[in-house]
Structures are given as structure tokens and as C-alpha cells.
Length: 161
Length: 271
Picture (cartoon, rainbow over the protein chains, first blue to last red):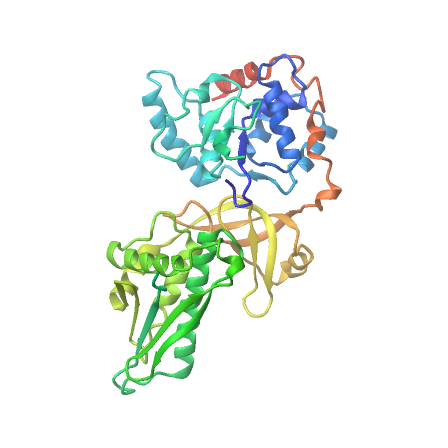
């Protein structure tokens, strides 16, 4: 739980893109919309890395929508976190640990930064779309990690709601 | 059940024949009670303390001894176990004294309270002892040495901080506090004259500030920032577009590609 007493969520960049692009064909879309509703209703807090904004620059997001996106991130239950030294240290630690645990597969630096930010912020859940981070759920021991999952359609019982 | 008790023993210097100075006596009690209230807030997760302390024993004979008991209004009883602040403070004092480090879950602002307790010692008040239950810790030269070592040096980084700006003090050293949603409970902001007006104008708002942040190596979160500028003063929530306005905001954001594959390709190619 966050300081507010609400669960703290972290969304990987592809969750944001799926919502903004109304990507109904993506299997995580409905879960992503449900997660968005929870944040919009004030039932959950959201944290994101500035890395999300950097990855968003690689999309076709136009300037009007970019402005709306920036303003939406100013909501009181949403918090941006910069990629600071502590996060770099955590990312470096988990990359080392994950690369041993994944036996040959390498954890990409940006994946590590997203996970490190969720760890730094003490997020309860990290919502991802692909399997790269998903395989790390419950695997890392060095830090207390959030539950890494596809965005669920129902509230997870672990959040106690 | 026996009501928990907390005893503070203040020993005046031999030069003063063990007698205490009034201001040091009052300050000692204030600092220790403040540490108890801080511990309570940390335990309950609330922003205000509801436990009060009554004096159940007070002796003037050198050394001066004060014993207190917690009292709480029935309506607040479910918020916090009344004995917890005593055991928490004793645990932390003992931990610092024996391990020469701070407990793992302690933030710098919490640790600062124990520095304040250590700093209560003066030439007129060379020794303080606190006791609760079977636990007893002497605040002496060794404690001071250990907490100095535990706190360690500052680390610096240029960074931005987001949070609600509050608690401005413009008398003497100019400071305010930022209360972020995640991470540190609060971050002290030190600022100079040129920023005073801007900071006052942002009071009560969420802001994004940049500057040189200060960390302790053992704490993940900064405890202070030398403010260089306020990058943004966030509008009130009602003035912002609804959070849900991002849904379907731009259907061609990645030109019809699959977002999962788009991001994966980006990370595989660029990193």
C-alpha cells in the first residue's frame, strides 16, 4: 500500500500505449482499461518512470496529445520518478541477478529501469504486456519486488480490497 | 495489563553539583517526547499523534528522574498500541548503540530524531539515560560516536522532486518541505532570496522542483534539496483533464502496430 493507503501500481510503457491507442486486439487491453478506471476513480495510485515519457517520444503522439498526457500525469494520485542514481544502482543489481536467474536470456536495460523504479517506489504491482519482465515475478531475492503481472481484470485479493 | 512506562534520567555535571539548567531540562523532555510522537506517527501511518504522556514520577534529587505513562482517548485506541512508541524508540536507541548503524527501515528524517537526542548532551548535561521495561540505554559519548558513524556523509545528485509544497519558513535559513506521494515522507528544501516569492506562490500546490538533492548512502530517498528552480506548479485537480481522457486519445499512436511488439523491438534495437 502507498502512503495514501491505496495500492500503488506501476505500468510498463506498452500498457500506456495500449490505452492511448485503444488497442482492443491486444490481450492485455481490457485489463489495462480496468487498471485505468481504478486510477481514474482514485482507487489506486500510479507511479511511472520518466523512461515511459522517453519511450513515448518514439511513438507518433502528436503535440496536442502530448500536452494532455503531461497534464494527466499531474493528477495527485500519479507520480513521475526520474531515473536517479539510486534507481540506476537498483537496476544494475537486478540486471546482474536476473541475468543469472534467466539462464542465458539477458534483461534489457530499459526493462531493468522500469522494474527498478517500481521497486524504488515500493509499488504493489507492476503491470506488463510481454513475457520478459513477467518471467521475473517472484524470482529476484535481492530486493522486495512488486508482483509482476499482466493487468488483471479483477482486483487481486493480495491487495486486500 | 501493566501500563508501559518510560523513564528519563538526566544527570547534571559534577561542576554544577548535579543540578540541571532549566532550559536544558525542558529541551531534553521536548526532544524525547518529540521522538516518541514521531515513532507513533510512523507506526500508525497517521500524520498526527494521538498519544499523550502523563508524568507519574518526578524526582529532583540528582540525577533528575522523570517517569511517564501514555494516555489515549478511547476513540483513538484502535489506531496504535499505546506502548509501541516506547518499545520502538528503545529498540532504535539500542540498535544504534550496539550495531553502530541505523535500523534498515529507518529514513533519514527518523534518524535525525536520534541525532537530536544525542545532541542533548552538553557540558552541563553530560549523561542521559532512558529506560522502559527491562531495556536501558545510556546516551553518552559512545552513543554520539556511533550515531555520527551511522548517519555518515552526504551524497549529492542533480535531480527533480515532485510533491506538495508546504511548511515554509522564511525567517533565518529559508526552508520549506516537499511531501512526495512515493518515497521519502518529506524532503527539506533549502532556498535563497531570489526564489522566496516563487516558493510562497506555490504554497499548498504540487510542484516539480530541480536542484541538488542530498542523500545518505544507506537511504534510498533524498532528505533535502538545495532548490535551484521550480520547474512547474501543478494546477488544481479540477483544472486538469480527467485521467480517463488518455483512453483512445490517439488511435494511430504507433500506426496500428502491436504495442507489446513495438516496445520490445525498441528495447532490443536500442539497448
